[in-house]
Image 1 (cartoon, rainbow, N blue to C red):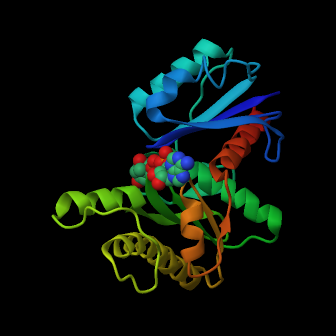
Image 2: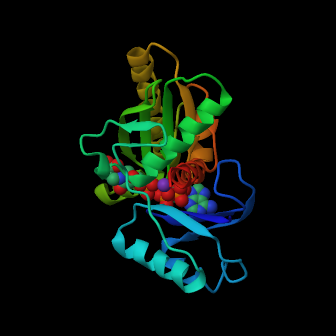
Image 3: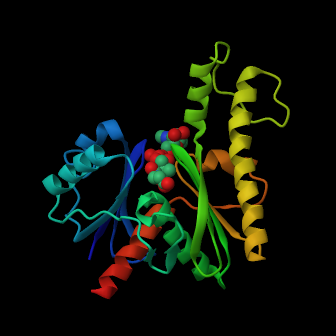
Length: 257
Ligand SMILES: Nc1ncnc2c1ncn2[C@@H]1O[C@H](COP(=O)(O)OP(=O)(O)O)[C@@H](O)[C@H]1O
Ligand SMILES: CC(C)(COP(=O)(O)O)[C@@H](O)C(=O)NCCC(=O)O
Ligand SMILES: [K+]
């Protein structure tokens, strides 16, 4: 029962093909395409793959992009494209958002992946789940698996572009992260990095106060590796939290049928 997982963010489409529809399944193939290159999938990276038996994805880059991806799936494979919509509860997580379906599906899926990972590592704990993609999200989940709420911040690229377009004197190359930046490039790079690190640390404190226990902290997303060295408290950097979440959801849904 091979399974194709797809995560469409605002910058890239990520895909992974697994030998089975359950967490921990063997990874057979994977890749990432910038959104402009989605049309290449069927005749490019997917050309030599055997058709998966099932597919599940999450997509936050808009209906038009999701349809373009769907066309590639249907053109190349013999499986029905299915997409996760955030709901009031799924796979052991309860959604505390005011309007649960308005929560970004990628955020919901990553939290489900993180909760599964945390429970496989030991007893239940509260969590902070950080995704560093086009945007940055910082989620709080209590010990029972209730999503309490989360932060949305601009990612590195958006922060820099916003500063460049709103000022006359900030058109400079990328710099280094420094404790005490002494040039414009380093000041911008460090400012963005520590804005994210500071927000994450604040959320960690909120969760600790609210839940009365130190949260398990997970970080994922294309630019997660950039943030890892600058975090205040230790975070486990997990490459495929969204893919893990899609596997967890697919397994739970298959078991429920
Ligand atoms: N090799 C890479 N290709 C593309 N983006 C990268 C790469 N390495 C780091 N990044 C950073 O990761 C971000 C994209 O991460 P990703 O998780 O794919 O975002 P999204 O899910 O929003 O599409 C980019 O904004 C960029 O800053
Ligand atoms: C916050 C996001 C833009 C993150 O997108 P990404 O950085 O993964 O491309 C996305 O999850 C989204 O559009 N969310 C809908 C609004 C919400 O979650 O409240
Ligand atoms: K994402």
